[in-house]
Image (cartoon, rainbow, N blue to C red; front, side, top):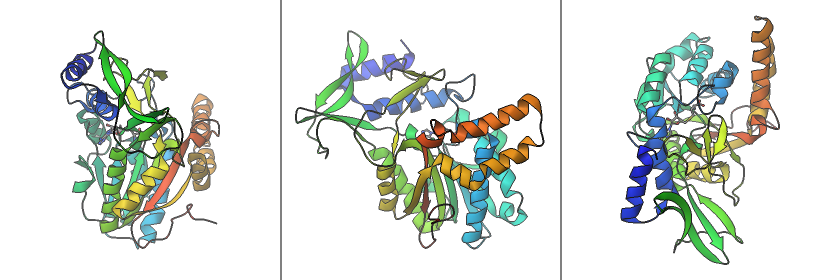
Length: 349
Ligand code: SAH
């Protein structure tokens, strides 16, 4: 039993069944034993890999998007380049290399990271030493903002409810014979849903979007949210645990594996609207990367290398945009503050 599992068992024995958002928050963010608090989980030796870790081109194309939106914003002399949940800082390092092509833009940019993990803050500092760190959007500076979040919202805790024969229950973690189990607890909550099945409630995630939306409304700017998920709200259990690049049970070894859920982009969009910002488009990761020039940039880089390096580079680009894989499962939503039109390639007829 992990140290965190003993702590959670004791909490449940004292307070009763634990809602999944609390369980997820402890597994990922417990100050001593939380998954992200204690390790760098990315890459081959870790539990999972992400688009910026697969290819530098992912961050580069986002850099191109930022550069063009900086022009749309009227080239502000100071702006905040914000990333939420920056992992190893790889994406921002790739973005900055592209932004540096325009000296004025680079001079105007101030990097701000929203990150809770001390281990990952150190990894980010190694790649982007001049950044400023925040625990949430509330302390971001009042500067025009360009933001990106990749696989951030999927890590924010959710709750699950289940309707069985017309009665609503909350799915909670309990203890049976000293071990964690998943069970149903009757609830008086009002959740609108049709028929039976599981519905996910991402109030915390939506609140985060609302806070960020409010910042965009006040400070101006735009940003991109990349994540796996669905365009429309629907029923179904999407909670998943990942370990050693494979799926695991969410109750196994708390604190030792990543737990996430699919992002409901419809709900997330409502969160941004509640804060005063505007979601201006949603497309697949494949469509975004392809229209931003994935093929051209891959060919350009491939011309500079040989052999296995070349093959890996091409394979990495394909992986990011594969229709049966990341290319379609991952979506990207663009969000703007007041008064700017949907930036290319969103809203392009
Ligand atoms: N964007 C990176 C990492 C994704 S993993 C990449 O694509 O490689 C999720 C990231 O969000 C990690 O950096 C994690 O520490 C951070 N994170 C998770 N929950 C958070 C929270 N509540 N507040 C701030 N950061 C959080």
